[in-house]
Amino acid sequence: MSHTTNRTMYAFRLINVFAEDTALSGNPLAVFEDARGLDDATMQALALQFNLSETTFLLPSAVAPVRVRIFTPAFEMPFAGHPTLGSAYVAREVRGLGDAFSLEMRAGVVPVQASGDVWTLTANAPHWRSPRADRVQLASMLGLAEGDLAPQGEPLWVDTGSDQLVIPLAGFDAVRRASPAAAAMIEHTGDGPRPLAYVFAREGERVLARFFFPKLGAMLEDPGTGSACANLGGWLVATGAALPQSLTIEQGEATGRRCRLRLTVDAGGSIHVSGRVVEIARGTLSL
Image 1 (cartoon, rainbow, N blue to C red):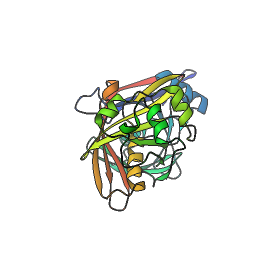
Image 2: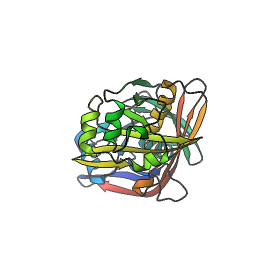
Image 3: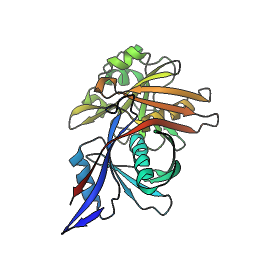
Image 4: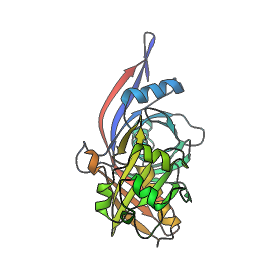
């Protein structure tokens, strides 16, 4: 942050999180290095200006080395996975914090650590509940048949920082064929904070996942959703899965932005989400 005549310059970085082997893979994020002086309305306007799934703002904290605020183009979020990891990368670079520290979020204090360019967050302990919609309604909402839902493991609302509907499907083919309708999603996920769905299937330790949400009447898909990956860990805990488990989640295939996430749930049920973080650009913005 620097000052010119009657204007202030704010430094930002463009980051890709959950990147694969190329710099232009992963889920993009804008991170403002020092957001002091920006009010809520300006942060929201900047998130809309960048029009990425999220933009984050680093601020001083009384309870952690850094406070992070996360905005979509439309609203502020209490927690999200790829903004956490991307913000951690920038915080280490600009604050000299080393490879292990914590970030203050609206959802709580989140520990993070790095091994090279791979960052890991530790999620909150999960809470869960059954959805109001039944299996037939959820399958129809996704444009699928009831038989496309996994025969074992019920759909659940899971919250490890962000409350999301987690729906297990019978196989990778069902994940790829999922084509939810915005109106149906709004109707059948009204018992949650927002209409959204995370669908997944697994083959051994490999998971294929997609994350859907409507916006202005259109159905959108997120390329890489760390909060939902954490909630998948919560779903494993909720459904009594054998622990520990370590899974590789592939997401973003249908969006043209392939992402690779790593989920580890240890024997005690602690949930960890990891991914590669790549910086692709830096800049300044004057206000």
